[in-house]
Image (cartoon, rainbow over the protein chains, first blue to last red):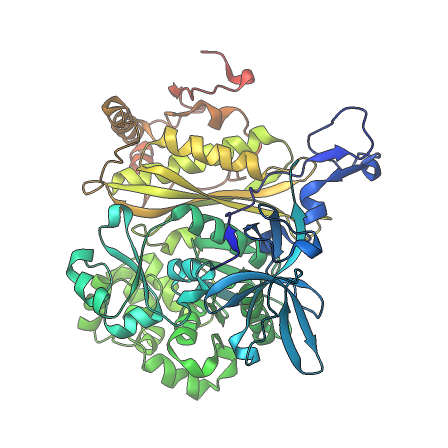
Length: 142
Length: 445
């Protein structure tokens, strides 16, 4: 049972800047001439350092609730970023996708849930564990 | 010395499917054409089982069941998106990129000190960032780069990256001698048969052939191919691209442009040109690649925008194709940059006669087909581009400087005829075909 579904792609939209402090919303093309760029945020740029390598997945289940990742959240997954100890990753276990925290210390390898109701996954070897990508953002609507 | 790399995805469609289905790693996969008709892509495992390409699916169904082959209908939205990502990533590796098909592009590596290491880095980056396996072939001309790519694919010891410079001249000769002339870029099956009759059997035979004699027997492209095999870069993509797979039209501008109208005009022009070719051979296209780029040299912010637009319904209609391409352009366009090149690639080319109707798409208007054939006839009679989309005329800024170009006597019968007529000093008064979404400044009906 996989605990994410793939939601497909991020639309290659032009950057869209929103002002950080609210006097209404300005949306449109940023230009190098904009001298108030500091005060606005491009959400795509904020969430993704390399949009070409980023994919969006939707979370199923609550195994990562301790890390603030809830059922239905959209995760931005950077496939190109190297997975380091402590990163939240999308991994493939027995052919299924799963979101867990990567533990990689002292030759020990494990996928840690952030919810005591779930077991720690310990792959038998490095070969058996495929890290699909590193989670670099989480989007939720209220 | 010039130096090119050809990068292409291994079994691209099946690799795209596998990225999102890691349970299929190491398992055979095939992808079927529109409406699940034929096998259009096979993973290495599926090839090993002996599933032939381009066979109707029902003929291989039992074989697939027996070997538990994963069978996918084609998902052009997915392949188009993965292609866009792949091309965007590849654009970072060279100042000049020529996109050749959905999963292939040439990169200009001229002046690079360690092209082989660069090639390995390219391959690893595609694997890391997208999970797509690829092969890289490197050589002093595009033809040799393409041949090198073939070597990288066929011979496992190169681990996916092969550079001719890695071989001694004697080794290179032996390798060329072992390759059938059919493997050379631009030499199709039929041309290969004719060359065989002239005792030109291997790539080495062609490299050593008398180029001028071949030009006499065949055409100038083959003459240039011989030069390319000898390390002289002289072929443009449009010369060689097999129109049965993809049709390319692209061009550099006479001067850099930074606003949308001239880019729109040039994209419309390229679509019109490519669509005319498409109709001439009785095909339709199901996917359009659109690219715009800034000059990599001397530009503060090099940018190469590329996107792939899948069509709901394969088409040969200039207006429909242009509509999709213009939507792609609007996605790519970033203000404040100075663009120096734009182009389109028509992909997923199929036979119009065997094309099936999408049950849910509106049936194409038969009047549009008549309109297109009328335009083609008029353009043949009155000269290239006599009837064109109005949007092509909203700006002339993008056109290539070619005031001194001689007419295309040999390739354009119309221009050959014109040579017999009185030279006209003013531009011919052409009819204009108005694009429905008319630009405000072109509204003089």
